[in-house]
Amino acid sequence: MVCKQLMRKMLPLARDCEVPPTTAKIDRFLNTERPSLPCIVVDLDVVRAKYAALRASFPYATIFYAVKANPAADVLSALATLGARFDLASQGEIARAAADAQVFCRLLVDTKGADWPLTRKFGCDAEMAVELLLQARALGLDPKGLSFHVGSQQTDPLQWSRPIAVAAQIFHACAKRGLNLAFLNVGGGLPAQYRTPVPALDRYAEVIEIALRQHFGDSRPEIIIEPGRYLVGDAGILRSEVLLVARKSRHARKRWVYLDTGRYNGLPETQGERIQYRLRTMRDGDRCAPVVLAGPTCDSTDIIYERAGYKLPIDLEVGDAIDFLSAGAYTASYASVEFNGFAPIRTYCI
Image (cartoon, rainbow, N blue to C red; front, side, top):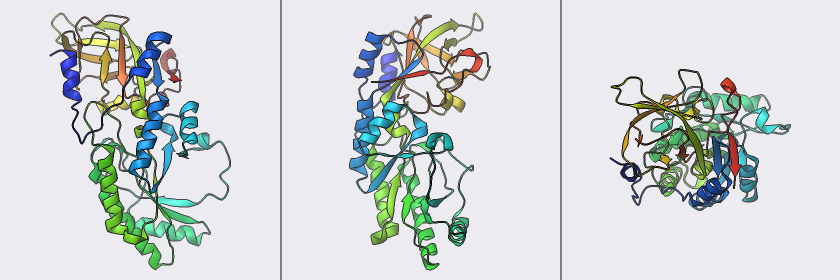
């Protein structure tokens, strides 16, 4: 099977699936500017288009961009100009006082269907949520609402239905105690386009709208949505370079392909081979064979893909470029230290 056939198999253009944006603008930049590798290039026009799609699909919601996905200044500026608000998760991201801040409670929910689950660490069950919100009021705080997160890269839109139903029960329980909550944050989780096709944005919007109408009726609170990956993931390409192609024995079936990027400088979400990026080489169309992809560091856990069934051209050579598509989210923002002497990956916004 040749690489082009593999890419076609991975990217069916089904009507109910999200279609990846064109990479032409980034390709021109990489071909003309030839930046040092590895690097990430983000097309701000794609970010803007993604924001416009969210506005159209969720006209009733306030959009908060999850800054941790990609905190590049040009990304934040582009979204701010469009009217986005920002979801900040630490003092380092806020870097200012938060006077008069209101508080809300995070609900613990099932994250089945998410490629990058966010389980157990944050949130509480419904009974405790009611108790905490009432206690916050008793302490003189200003409890305003609820939030939940169904897991990052959530590929099942129906996973929003149950948390919205539970949230409505909490709203009603608090109202009976004289506490009227004002907003519901339905979190992030909207996916980027990796190897497996994902439902179209309209499908997510439809499920969320039906659940809100069914469980809140005419008493719908203010709705907040806080995507990160969806807005910037498909807008970026990570270009890497082949450092070494090797076999572990003369009879080994798989080649090991070592790249100048890996788990510790740009690809942490390949842990457990959960996030599987679409790959592109300059030799696509040539005959392919199975590979193990590994990063450049001396750490033995710096293996990108070993069991995911990737195939690359048999003529792949040292110095060849390999592109990780839809790599605009949770790549450069994780590569923040010079582990093993490899500099943090650089981002170019165009």
